[in-house]
Length: 344
Image (cartoon, rainbow, N blue to C red; front, side, top):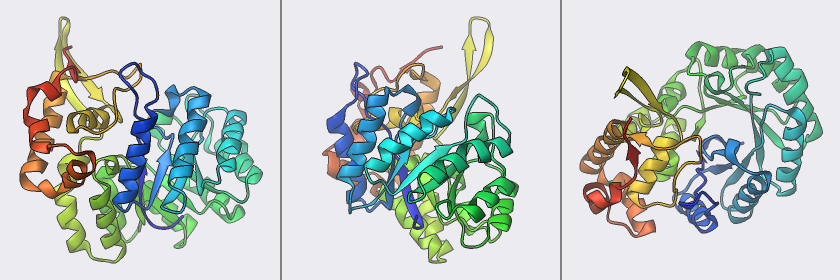
């Protein structure tokens, strides 16, 4: 996989909760038109845990077909069942994708050793001609393959040469670089840390698999390109413009219930898809059990988006142009906010 920016693509649904195939095709075209390095289909941001298998294969196939020769294609095929992952990997491999993304097995709680031997080694050995990208995100999975086992994989399997790092732990990333060597590629899985871990000489990440690239593919791609060229000042200007958006991947608010205060955490992709609906992009609602943001959370999001539009309107210009929408009207007309939140 080459350095750069890869979008963890959302999956657009209709209001009835069905796959919006026309919207999916529009989103793929939008990413390509704005110079994205690659697209990840059927990842967590794409709500793959809610897919029927037929939908899973279809989304990967459409991305593989429409983006062929235009950007790289990654298929999310990880699960907490190695045999299921092997089957999904087989479907994706038939579509000639450029890489398979495997999240650490969730819920079961395997050790790092088990994750390596009973999961990654099995899939990497079964598909030696396809790039395998381990996805390390213990906050989602409750398990983690450690840098030591990742280094063993990288040593023994030529098709494992990079990682999506979403631990949020800089020391873990430094160990990955130390054990895996300078040629191993680290991609950030946390939008808020992209600049920091690419600029850190002990980590030297080379790009990101990004959530907010759904909204701003052009500028995230530019920022990552500048960082890879060593232009930290130029990259920081874009980072500063994008920061209000990068902080919206998760939105946490304190809410009042009839039994007292509660913390309410709107996790990815809920804030992102709420924003995309607000801006007039294909997206639609999330699938249950994800629902809506609270009104307070929505206004945190709205204020951040308005600040970006006021200070750096160029960020949303590609959306306005491609989807033929008036961003100012979308952000200030109350009719576009209808049904985007609920009260606690």
